[in-house]
Length: 235
Image (cartoon, rainbow, N blue to C red; front, side, top):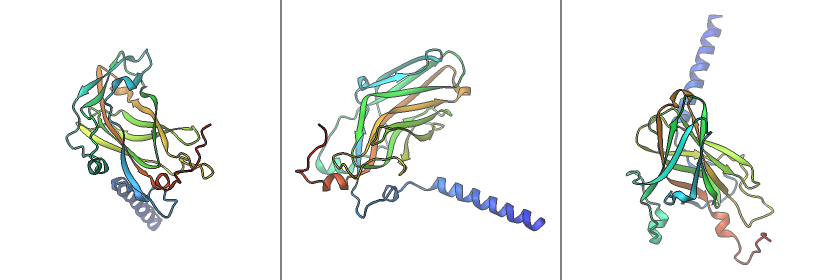
């Protein structure tokens, strides 16, 4: 019996150690959902949140009052996209999107930062990342995307229990369909917005969250290999 207990204890230790090790590993986009012999990975900007009119914010009316605006600033640690630098592309990047919630009372609720129209990300998307200021709260932020067939998926970035700016990244699971082998005219995902799940014990007073520079690492091999004279099935 003692030997059995010791064996079970060692198994538990190994499982916990493996889980911690897995959480500490960085995501390698080149190893995610590899289903072709060649890849052409490219980092692209999806939105820099320069236009606040492009976004809408929603929260249940009995939870509190929700406002948003554009503010000057951004993370100092953000690096430019290599391909844009090589091509001499200079896009405006002076503002961030700020959202403020003023709560009436404590309670479980959500905030949805919705794009006025879906943001298309071409290619086979491997990862999506966004810069966030979460004000060290236990609220959780996720990305809402639409797959090739229009099915909605919620991809969790994680808990915003940190101070200052942090780039949060989520890997796209291979179970999310991004292409159809019968139709090669389009592929990828569409970003619908951000879902913030509020921790009910921290829904009091005012809460601020800031978003900047949503980027994707995507495989553009199929896009670049497509015949220029191929027909588009959009009629």
